[in-house]
Length: 439
Image 1 (cartoon, rainbow, N blue to C red):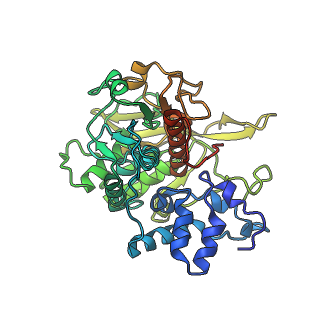
Image 2: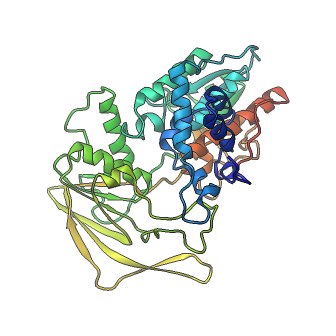
Image 3: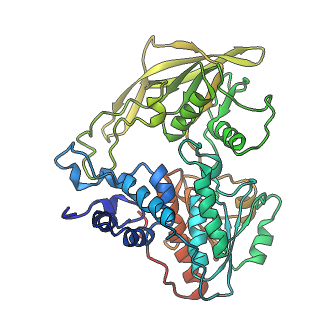
């Protein structure tokens, strides 16, 4: 690659060996490229489709700015899909069993990565999932137009062949107690995510037609999977005026889903100001660039607007009919922090039939498992963990959004791998699982 210092390694939370497998692909050595890719990433078929590619923001080929980076994510996806086509991706059950058992609570990307690493180290691993399908966010939060579920099922079959046991419909802390979990397993990994959505406590919030984005996306994914959901319970954007509150990835997922359901018109409102088109002076390369990004869902249509604060909802007969809002002005205080101020006489209202709240997440749900365990929490409301990903209770570890807060799929996998190493070392006194220093 001849890129001097490969900053993409540092830009990637997994520390992917990007220049190495790029070079191997260039030399048509695809199988070796797969080995280098799998050395750091359990699921490149997920990250190759879902990751926003912070590695590309750190690519030296961008210099001098604003040149284009190497299309790292596309190369990654082609390596793994070519490997599946060639039959190179096979189960890797352990050669030696340790006799130790580990429970992984949560089957999202962090839980799956943690489980696969531990199983390959020789431990008996059981994944507990409260919903009826394994996959967590991958199964229910990501729309099919971004991740078709056969991709997930393909990986789950490999993990089953390696000996990982899946237990869906098991809500630990509800229909399976924390005490039972501790009694039956030598170690526990909590990978339940940050599933508590941020609400909007304003007048009219209780009107029918205002829903959390996760509930909306989950219903569509369930219907796509063949579940029968009565029309009176199904949240749909068909022939409706839709407003999405929140300009992040979840909001974009709602946008793409609403397009496919046949929405009449869609607005997406963001509280923060519109990002710049190019890096600002205080956001230098190779940092993740805070710039205007357009997803495929945005290219399909919809109206995006920024610096808008929703003040209330009004309706009739219990149904939402109007959103009332005003515009904001943003400035920076002496410390560089953004400060908002309401713009005088900027109030407006807009007619709406469906409001989707994609405002982010507050952290893990405390009721149930976390309450029963009595774990130490951080000031941000996430589960506290030490450098080995162990919580305040010996033998109980945590990974992913549950401890990190809402983040990217690539961070979830990195967290899961780090927790697996900590668990293996705690159980065996030493570990040969790869070291990953989380930032």
